[in-house]
Image 1 (cartoon, rainbow, N blue to C red):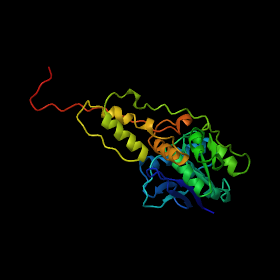
Image 2: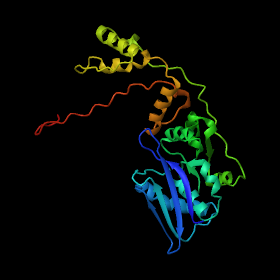
Image 3: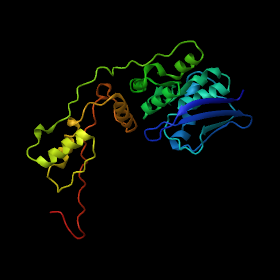
Image 4: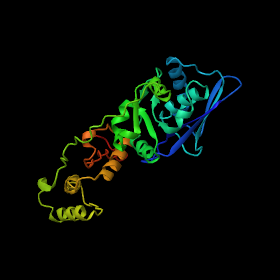
Length: 285
């Protein structure tokens, strides 16, 4: 059969909608086209996939290859579909069994050597896969973060050949080893460093106790940033659902994942001040 279907996940904010990768091989001049609103990094995956397959010892079919990323109206970004596309080409050409692909979802970028590289936003994908009762295959460097969704539904690999061995039932992929139980204590600053500001301190305490929103307004230098940075120290510890939501935001923001701090509340980050524009005709002395 010259048609293969592989499952993957897109990134849409903190959500991970499913993406079906359809690979069809047809007669004609050798070519490869990707449809389904792919951006530049996705279109370039054809070169990465071709090199990864050849370097791993597989045959790249000299046929007309059409790859559809469904749904077609969902924009596709990044190299997260490389592994799914490569496995779809192998399954459509009969080099790996097609039946075993139905129980997995694949999210990883491929190097030219066939090595698997981590992608941004793996935690939302792992949470969505666990709800659909499938198993996620990702790069080893993404394993600790994806394991927050449950290590039973995540498999990690370093190379394309290891994934093919799992699909051929030759060798099983390992589950990630998580260290999320060894969390660091929350060291957020509290109000002990604030002198005066009795009305603002009272507002912070009421906001923290009642889970209310808070807006600090005032001229520069009155302590708004200092007070805002102390709010996290007044709040109770994060529960598991809040910690997962916070970790998902950090996952898509491309921050380095630290398993020991995933239950700590995010701290206030002050924005750097922009230099003021000088009026026309002025000179800096």
